[in-house]
Length: 501
Image (cartoon, rainbow, N blue to C red; front, side, top):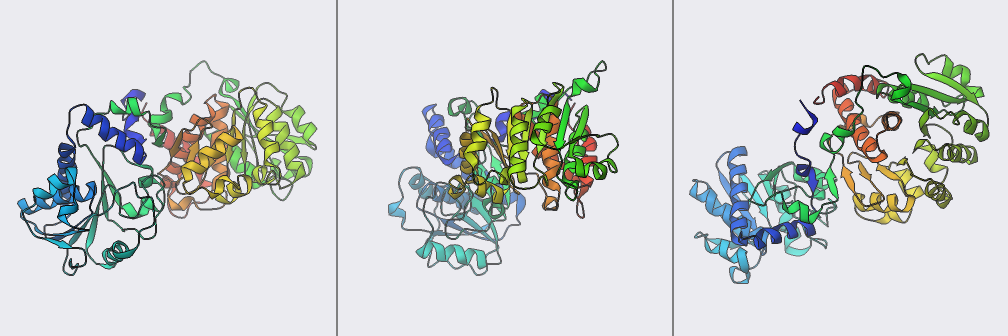
């Protein structure tokens, strides 16, 4: 299968709530009425409900905005299909306006207030209370109703996003509905893929409601859900005439004698990801320990940062990883500066990041001085908070990662179950395929090594980081429960073989 046969890249776009409003507006400007879009949205929800749930008593909780309008369409269509439907409304019918009022006029059944609407005996609850643009915590009667929905044994289907979830950040604002299925429209929003929203959504169904993909050309979304469509075309292509130096030479800087395993994990991952040569640059006191464990990976002793700089003078070395178990302090800062000064693409992880916690501007200035700035920083939340204390206070993970990338002039890989990869220019992807089994010691060292190996093969830092995060997730899923970090590099060939082409 050719690379261009993968799902079109725009399918992975994540639209902020403001971008989704614009998609609606552009569609309406193009001649499709808002009422038609609402009818299509309600029909998509009703269809999903009929596909996933058995017919029974359904209570549809409608808000006083467009989400509530969708709810009235769902109610009408399910009743027409023979379901036992009850509608509860936040506010009154008279308060509804625009398309929501048109949709409500099509419902001929009774409408109860939220306080009158009893959840006992419901098989399914449809949450059409709030939309994705919520900007303040849920409280009062609405919060009480959401608590009651969550306490009910009934299944729950949410319209667009579960009520209480911020569509841009995935944050739960006060209290939020816990849905089994969420039906959204045209494209996902960041809140569908970022935690805790991702958990609260349950299964996410993206429905086509008649918005043309061409509106994305006008919107130019900056965020996407990570997948091969973003980077598959940039993966290294092997040629029968290649030799090992054509495939890049990666170096991984080791820690001292008692801290060598992390570097070897990174080095093996770099080699398994396709780098032609990998060398562990090792402090002399750790050289014998590393030598006892390395075979295809080479070894180069050094003592000082100046020595490391001389090791990296070899122009064939084109990617370097420093940080895994390197030790925190001035020595690691000096080694990191030598790595950055070498001109090779650089990955700074773990201790290399924490070593600059008291002087982050020193690191950022060193990166800014590089002509092409081919640098990837891979912090987890704790390391991020130490290196970017101001950005760490932002609510959204995408916002935090994008601001940090702009400050540091580096690609940021903000690691978690919902890892975000961000560029200084403001683009970002959210990774969604990482299983919980990856929460094990050394897993991050392997990820850093994969990034380094791909950089050695001349992928751009952003593409290398996106590809590595996804491949890392797939290796974790393949290894499954009980995996240890040592398993992951050896899963890479199988994962890569499964890619199209």
